Image 1 (cartoon, rainbow, N blue to C red):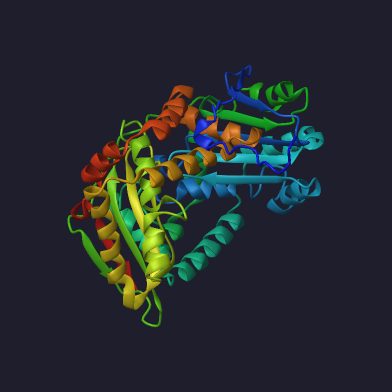
Image 2 (cartoon, one colour):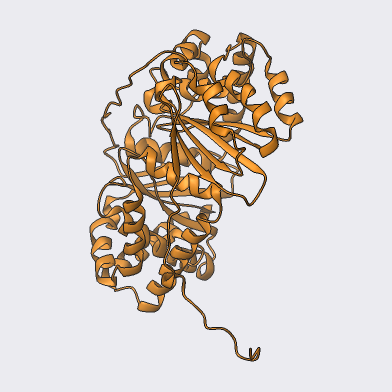
Length: 426
């Protein structure tokens, strides 16, 4: 080997990416379990997913409150006892509520899986919703909200979603002091009983699993029809966007920065243009080397960072451009964003720039597939959205083959400045 000669550089787009398949098991009560095994580290990730997000609320905030308070006391143990038991083994028992789904996730060492599963079972199957914990939750959340409402970026995020989807739509609904005050234990118990059921549960497991992991899951989650059967119907709720397109809100008279948001609705991930727009969005504002960053941060110095993203919501998506800039340059920032939108419409993307973004996106995907935890998250995203591996491979092929002409067509269709809601909060 001649070490004076460097090895040839291989672009990321030349790699043949393969999505490692999962194993699937079914517990005795019908709960599907999706498994991704790995021998790399002596750790396990176990996630229970339920259709219990804000989409299914009858009262504002009850989905998030129910999800949070399930861990704060059961029929046998207090919140402190539960937390101390989990902490003793160096584990994490996390919960999250999103628009469509809610989750409970256990991270632990492989050797502690068997002793921690009964704690997770108790939290999920026997929450007590103590009144004192609800009162403390309401107090803490209201304090956080009061602090956050002083922040321009927080206020901007609330308003732009409301303009895009309507204040009564799950994607546009926001928290309020009144909604926290209205939360009642009876409502949380009813929401729990309806949504955290055996027949609504999916389990995703990854890591260096104990050999008896499926019998253990069957023992704690598959042996009974816990909470009974609940057949949910997911309604298609109407989107009621704001008629006006431009908004200026004064939030902090002593602030030195303003929050800028430019957003428009966009079809969901099932639309054929969705994967193509992910590429155009990356070029425009989706990574540190994007056009928005090069212009508005590097050249103009208006902001520390500006990004564009495409929401991955189930019913309808949105394109959202967001930044915080000096109060005196917020309007100039908007002008520059529009200039970049029009440049993508009027000028084909140079080959060198498109090749760079192809390699960046493929490289990011390769990083996202590094390890069992990342792989099961990729599969979870597909499974929960009723998609399969063909969607993944089609997206890879789109990144590798899309042309500058196709991207310019998409820019003309979706990047017209007049289609965007425009918000500045200062």
